[in-house]
Length: 538
Image 1: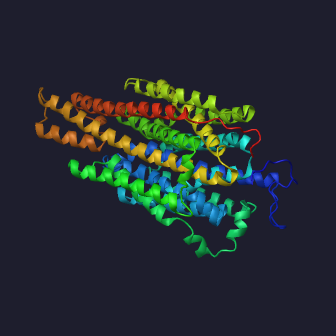
Image 2: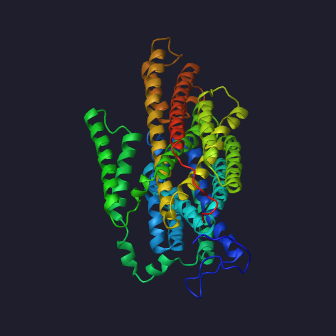
Image 3: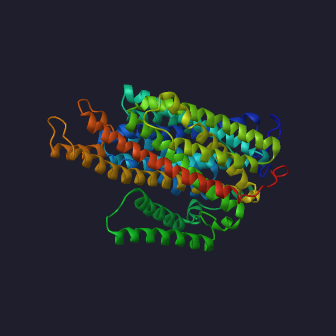
């Protein structure tokens, strides 16, 4: 059902019903506008949280648990994004986009009125369902209505709105926090979400596909029970267990920790074999037997780990080590988002002109590796200009990589399987983002504890600051672990401040070292991606 827009009166989609099946250029643009608006909204939400993470942690005194606010959103995305391909095949694109809009609306409202971490996590879980639908369905619907050769270009447009959202989210969150408080960063999204949902309801009217006509003969209950809810439950449970293992140490006992790891392994193994044998799998894992699909999925997985870890913890590094405000963190992130936006369009245009993507894929991989090394070379004494420029190579490489991944994957399967393989790509992408933020949080906490313990032990063995006791020093260490802004408290002795800041600096660089490893893994995966012909495919 891939189409190409000719003019206002051209039948764009094969007519399966005499009353429907024609799409004008205006309708085509409105559909894309709705998709782009949803991607923009979801991107704004994720970036707002990344920028405000340190402020929320300080206000709620919940440094150790604050990563749940970020990872709960990513967890629900990871669990739900793979589902949306199959669900939208069964129920239709428009109803599921509207369902995603309602979830996003409700989740933002809950976050805006919440006063503790638990309420925020619940709100973020619900918001993540909506955001996952926005991202996945934008890509799937785009594949429905454009030529494969042009798919990279339109993916570039989607990425532009993603990065525009990232730019707006960082800046707006700082402004909103400065004047209204961080809660309004969530509440102000509610009316915007209402407007986009209304636009989708009135203007999004995709012509039916042959399988839609078959589904119309089924009741809603028959459609519901045809979905692989068992597989979805196994996937969600496995991802949650993986979050516990990677993001938080459930116990100092090696026996308990080993039990968690074994449970995760068994969960994903059970999911794989279940999906192999079920009639309507939520993720068609048989497609992973295709070398390009598997290599591209793993490439997407490692790139997402790298991209989201840097997205969340580079602003956190600036705020905890340099005392940069949320607003300034947003300003320093603008350049990277702008470069990523232009890179998306350039990558899509290049694929359209050459009908090839493998060389571009290699270039993006090398750039991600170099960009990760560049982040590791940063210091706490770098100025605002260097901070604004240091992430450019990483953003350039990741943006080009994400654009080429989707083209590589959908070009390696028949058109009838493109929505499913798109779900696979977003499944690996969202799972990578979840694991990335969780592992980065675990690395941060582990390194921070060790560094604070060592630095404060050194303070105990030197003359204490005037008026300070060992008990006060011990309490300061605990507060520093909970509150990343504590080092910049007025009146804090310089030696204590330096001990805290250097600990957060070491913890941040341990994450940057982790980014280097993921970048190398991503580059290795690209080597096994095959170049498919794009000229004749639609």
